Length: 163
Image (cartoon, rainbow, N blue to C red):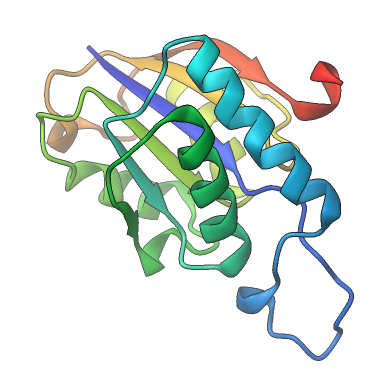
């Protein structure tokens, strides 16, 4: 059994219309919400073994703030394939995770993250910015995760529900 934490990046800034989408930073709310998710992870003793993040600036910023507050001391692994990835791309990234990691956090973007949750659990769920879903995945090895893999949606935390 593996644990998959799926985190959508926190709210990003649209202040500079000339900025490429990939380079948009977190806005004020995003900078506030990301540490709250880190605190939640710490309180629930859910420190990931590895954090895999999209290379987008807003995702990297979210991952760094969450990692700092939850006590994660590992390297945040950046993967360009996670940027705006569809479920098949997200699954490919997960298939390369070493099996020693029982708890993996993916930091990325919608709609791919919501689609991945639906694919694995059969549950349609809303994943707004800085929302975190915890799935229990019925596999022993990450290389076995596939579109037919079954997972259970254990928790979903949305920042606005925690204010």
